[in-house]
Length: 355
Image (cartoon, rainbow, N blue to C red; front, side):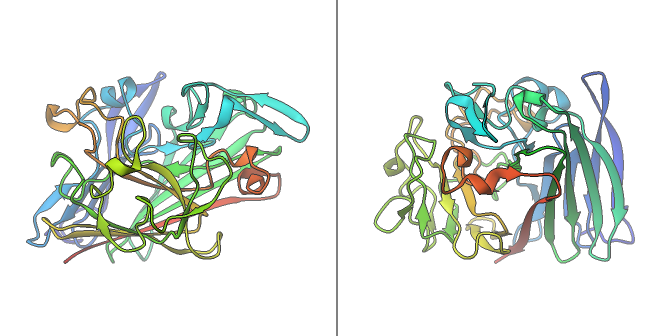
């Protein structure tokens, strides 16, 4: 494996243009040779290279070889989603007595910030070095009225690739007017390697004894125990075991789980293992929920890295978040409202290992 003495820990390279702005690609390398690539378009993770139990590295996130793929037919591969990730029912919400209508870009509902959410803009980047490892910080100013939302929001996401083989993701936002914020990191993982096919044999444990059922995908406000259902991952099991029983159109998991423990505390969320390679991912976060999605909508039309099509279940997402449609559920509203003087703070800690 490379070491810190031979590999520069932060590199920058041009990656094309979007909206007449230059897009840059940053490569972060830790002391053990783990490699993370992030571009300024969408503040997106484009590559993540991890060793298997034999020390052979593979890229474990779905994506494209060049910017064109992300500009054309991107199913949110690796991006930072905002202003509000996931769905808002009927693309409508009421805030401080005013009714807002936002883009109905998903079967009459609002999805992932609208037609041009934060995943489709160019962020500004700065780099630094922490005692833990290289750091990339990206910032975006979302103007009042953008995609129909009130308030000017200053958003930031930082990626730290630590020398202890952890990826620390810190998302922050402030506003000058009461608004909604729910940022999410939308990487699709395949720990066997991004070209390895289905994730059905991955073994997943979720620290979630309850989930929020929907009709079909937007929660109704109900919270149900997972026990006795296909949604019970409290004991680790193969992702594919109950996949068909999860239902949906298309079939698969696309559900919000209620993470055990205090909703604002940093705590375990998921443990994902890939038996063939021995790669292991542990996820912790300080968010109340996590969207577990099995790439149900991938149909081969997205031509990924190396010119290979990504088919159904080629990757899975573990998107820590506030609950979908929180603004329209009285018991959840406060999760998603951000007021002047407050700071939205969303932390994720991904720990990588082999077994």
